[in-house]
Length: 156
Ligand SMILES: CC(C)(COP(=O)(O)OP(=O)(O)OC[C@H]1O[C@@H](n2cnc3c(N)ncnc32)[C@H](O)[C@@H]1OP(=O)(O)O)[C@@H](O)C(=O)NCCC(=O)NCCS
Image 1 (cartoon, rainbow, N blue to C red):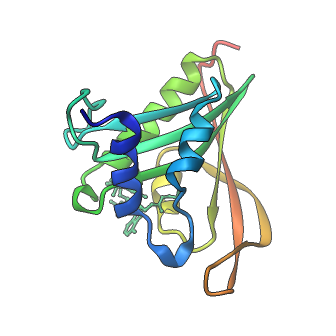
Image 2 (image 1 turned 180 degrees about the vertical axis):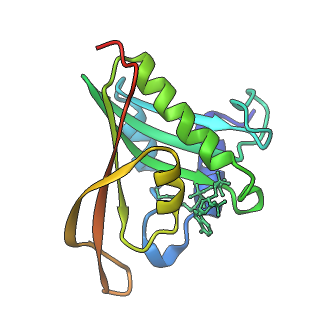
């Protein structure tokens, strides 16, 4: 049987380009999931939560704190991109955060990530920039941009 971590790592290894140094190792993911406030979601290629034996096409990793959450990672397997799956995953992140009573969701991305368009379409707005925050494997540096999505209709 393929467990959730195996399925998540299959997407991780295919989705992130090595030049950006963004992929997490299996150990980093498994250690983060030890904490009860870190949550992962696996979606199948049909855009629904993946059934236990179904291969994952995309995943998210979220850290929840009282009142606010942080999207740590989002990825869709390259063979399933451009069909709205990333948007489905983001909408689920926001729905989960709302259900847990959060008022906002944060994320941080390197300044040249084309995912910015997707984030803005889903309701995220840039609120800050950390100059030269990311150091790439090549040695080059890139700014980090922090985005926030304010959750309407939050119960708190
Ligand atoms: C970002 C990502 C999850 C989007 O998944 P997806 O299923 O293709 O997303 P959707 O189909 O819902 O939306 C596609 C939108 O994302 C944007 N986009 C994100 N990454 C893109 C890329 N590498 N190339 C082109 N467009 C990209 C496009 O603007 C597109 O919008 P459009 O349809 O209006 O042109 C996917 O590209 C990915 O896994 N990228 C690598 C991992 C990554 O960078 N994650 C974010 C940092 S943790």
